[in-house]
Length: 438
Image (tube, rainbow, N blue to C red; front, side, top):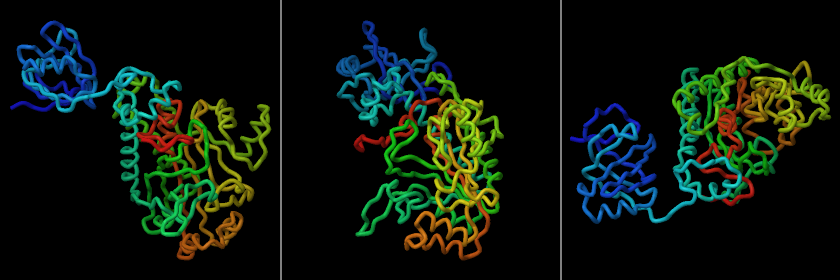
């Protein structure tokens, strides 16, 4: 009885019989022997195929097989002269034939971050997803999201699967993607915070990992039309406590993902940013940030959002991510608490990365007082809108203090892996000014 093995499995003894499956990466011919490099999701192994062990027609087919041809082979697991492991084949067949050649080769050592290759790689993402570097990033993404769920479970958060279609956006209607459903205008979710705010009054601690959508165009390296959010809310926490929780989460997921993907630095040729392990992070206020920008020669008026240039300049003062708290109420959505000590700002804080990577996530205390909620909703022109009625009703039945955070999955991966653009951190990116394909 032979065993089907993963190609990185070194536990099988020499001279054991194994069956391997994978896709042809390279082939070489030396007289009556073929050397086929076979790759699966775990690694690569060399198949040694002798003409004597193979029907002539099949041998010829293998000798001319194109890269990506799917193959299954059975043979003796041995230690080769030029490779650590190889299989000396006695039975082999083609599972699926490749009928086209891709240039550059899909599994070749290409620079997937090369801007000159970007259009080709994006157009053919359904094929280049097989590239080792793309796979490594997506495996890291899966490991990071799995680790996040483990952290939430350990911290007794309940996962809430919030709707993707919603009648109310978090920000202005123009910043959301809208669609018509039976004559009703609805939006693709920007943020599940309203739904988590409802659920937190049932369960105390809740989170959601799901997609969000952006209608407002941006050409920056940290924005996509479709991206993924890790959102959470917890009852009876204040801003300081939710910031500490975020620092704990980031350290947890970075360590876990790095441990599960130990070869990612080698595969990508990049060094991971593990500064998130150095919490607690420094803190400055928005007012202090404005003052510092003025010192550095950048005039930034109070009440204007900090952009990429401002965040990059401020980050030069820090060797780790840092918090900017007290974001002005004029630029923050209505659900966030007005700071009683400084009514021009909210009880919010954004985490800014070093090296120009910008904002990674945001935290906030959510409004409990119905009177404050009404004030903020009127400021934003939302109070009299029928679709927000149920948000007000949540605050009519025993609201308790609660705090929340929201983190962009792609932004965090980009930062941790030192990747130039968020489009390379998601399986099938939706990029502004590109048609939705594949």
